[in-house]
Length: 145
Image (cartoon, rainbow, N blue to C red):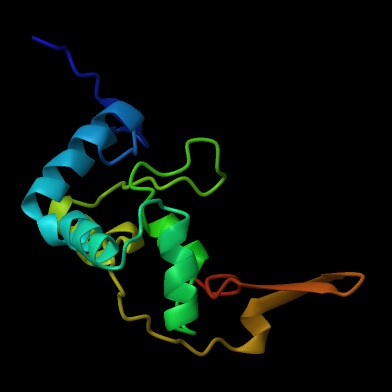
């Protein structure tokens, strides 16, 4: 029997799946593809019907047929395991399987995003040459009651 190591984050136990661990993410990906065969099976069927044989041909064909198709989004959504060396690797702290399906773009999720107005007093703008970054920190300046 394989021994699974549970990692810790901020003192809490975190499963390898939540942490995006490659080996266990592969297992997770496989189990999800079995639960949701239309994601992989539907793509394979569509590709076969269009006589597409490689992953490079698919985005080329889709880009010609649909001006809103994004090859970048297509490839990003198929990286279920995340980018282990990417600064924003797909960690999944606090998410269970259903949350991952509902919110993860690699499973085709399109969660609704709420826009919030923030007063200028709580924002800091920094510029270097023509590049500007604005950071909003609404908790700064707030007093504890």
